[in-house]
Image (cartoon, rainbow, N blue to C red; front, side, top):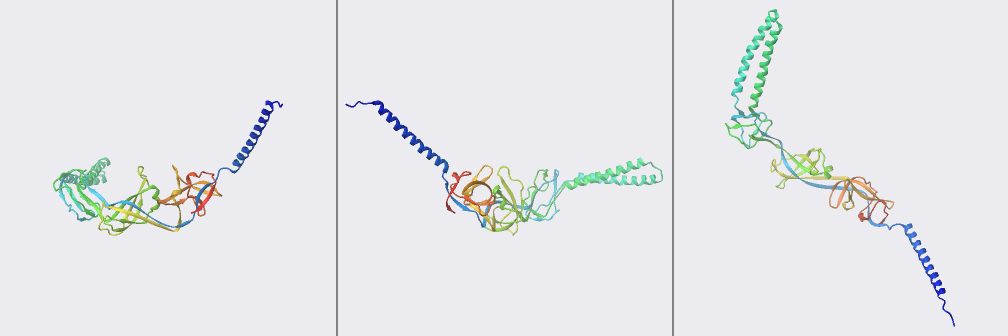
Length: 352
């Protein structure tokens, strides 16, 4: 009869469990070491090798037509109109008298000063003769001379006031509609008419900040009228300061052709077209990572990602022109951008 020994079975079970634990730990440690040695798996991405290529583009902007010169005709002083020479829609030359304000009181004042000046000049002449023969002291002569000079200054001032009663055309141009009638009492704030130079027209338009590089002084642009006619214009000035509210820049061009179907105030479409035959660097817009103050792309060197800051110019929904930050021969990722981090390894899936 065999006796059952529980202690022997317990001892054997402990030994078996210990061997299993040791084996499992050894295998797991080896797997962890292998994983640490190999690192994270490379990110699959499509790449693009940078090169230059000929490029042309066009930008449309809304513009407003302006007269080459424009002014509102207003009087310098208040008064009653005694003459009105405003022929609506007619051409006038520079310096033409357009209106005259009542000035009889000033004319009378002028005659008074002129009469007093004649007497003062004769007094000065007599005093000068007496001074030459020591019949008069220098102080009395100087006082007489001062009175004459003061009257001359009064005459100049009165004549200046009389000139203010004459409203003349500051430049040659076309008179607009008349807003007053002869004999009306007018004030300095009242507009009598407008004067415009319409033989030469200007166009003002705005561009967003990121398209400022597309326009330069002296470049030719095309304008299209509401009737569908096209005319050539030349950029003459660019506002150096951007609008703080819209971040737009204002540009002015002068129409080179005769444009009978556009007038000051007309709406036109300005088209800016430019081509770069030497070649530009173009990259897909989707490959650009926008940041708060910059733009970056995933530049790949030796299979490792580097986030490279770039500056872009003209761009469309598909492509953007790179002005700086990339050179021909560089490689960038064009897919999987969200999964690419600095220092990550890249497995090339295809070359676009």
